[in-house]
Length: 485
Image (cartoon, rainbow, N blue to C red; front, side, top):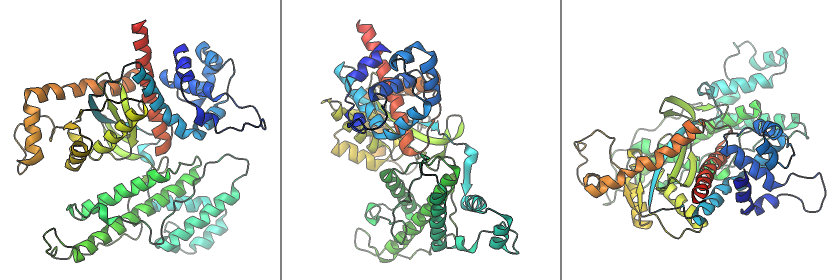
């Protein structure tokens, strides 16, 4: 407790204090330093719920001391977290800086890995567009007369005509948003995100990012998915609390994904029809045109539309892929989350994030070697990390157990990596990976009993994950100081 208070006293909390009025108007706010210390101590103890923190301020002497004998309401704590999303995520960098000042950061060799964490959503919460549309319609219908007016002599389970075209769906979404805004009470702090801005043609596909990659129609669609997810990250759209607002957001997400597939396939067909190979030759036979579905054909969670269904160690979870970069002392150098179930595209982004975190922490020493498992095998990322970030990368090209090379994979980076990992020095170096990264996840899930996220939405979950890893580092620093004493 005293250690957390001392650590917070040494942090720069300017971003927290800058959000409050300084003219004395309004009710007195709780000291942001006190609430930050309360959150860090609570996360370190495994107390993350706002209600649990409020109860601890009544019952636990350590929490009472941090709160200076005050008892902030759980709604006040929750609003503080929601209001200061970015500064709370930035506490990870400040804690890493404290570890660097104590000499705990040794970034010569780093290990990268991800773990699947369940979100605040059930696997059964995934719905397709028809189910979501029907629920929106059911909540919009107030009386049986209105339902008869809408369906007439039909069964009632068909979708209205206006939902069978993109233009009709856009107009329907606009009307529902207007109805929700009109029925919302002005004094209710309801979080309702505005629809993402987009062109009249829907999703815009960046052809230049795929032009050098020859993976067929599926590869272009995967690239479109990555571009759409990056666009959603940049927009930072929060997940609303009310179910009716989440239903509308989920329906719009499905519409965006249909637009993405349509744009990616049109770009692919245009490239095949008019593009040229590297040697100037035409690309050959034009592919068959892709038939776009009338309705979006994906599914999305109506509890947390940002979460994805992904394979974990014990079955499937509806959640996120939590990524971390650690050094040899198990200090977490970078912590990010993604809703991509695979690690294939995470090597370069995580290395880039780790370098930025080290720079912010004042660490001048750069990583020399990066270790990762076979899930991170991506030759494009190899080139980027080795050539532009001047780091060696050790990643096995296949899962453990294969002794013979893959058919048709002989030569190139594949043969070179197998030779490096077969050498004595390569074996000793790569053997460090498990003892560096796996205990961090094991400590989080089994010792701290943290197996799922409490909050919803990629921005909120990112803040939660970075707070968890910040308190992991804070605990390491505390034990280091005890040992030194």
